[in-house]
Image (cartoon, rainbow, N blue to C red; front, top):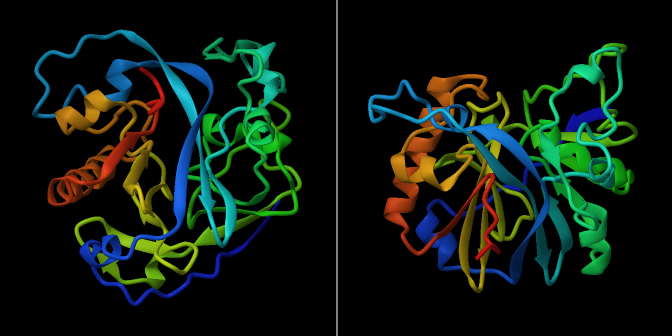
Length: 283
């Protein structure tokens, strides 16, 4: 894996009102690539002042990847979900001395992997934007093309512990980093980058869950869509206004990022929001 700087395209648009008045020929379609078992008290901080009694229970939630199709610029992914290894192995072929101690927390049905979805929809990938580098968001890279750019937020850490625990998720790829400090903030979300240069797809710096975590705005003719990714795991967290705890690098920063998202959604009720482990196609 090699790292380099992602070339940020400067935007003349200074507000979300202006951005949403200039909708672009872009669509988003979400793919479920499997499920993972998480704890409710990890996705919603039980120590937040809004929480008085939060039940401790396990939740099985979907693992999503999002296909971005731009009529002029082609096809991109936001997150890669899971590859086909998880169908027969709940550890996803993770290797190492400690691999046998991993919990069986992942599940995948046949033909649910990311490569199957892309082939079925005849997607010709030109790049992948990764919200962060946790396995359920990047494992699918192992069956994706290696000659396209993969993009993360600057400072995002990738951990492999050879010979103890490793998945080779990023083997052979070029990883590009977005330096959000080079752009002006767009209130209330803050630092936001125009990824394709025409206002169609935006990466928003939402640190907390991880150091370089990103969320995304899709600005299409069908109306704007906000993909929180793991800035907000589940709908309940959004409704309560409480960010995650146990799965989070910095709880205070995670809550600050969610507070900005909530303010943004209050100012722009026309925006459809999809949480990180939520399937918008589910009944």
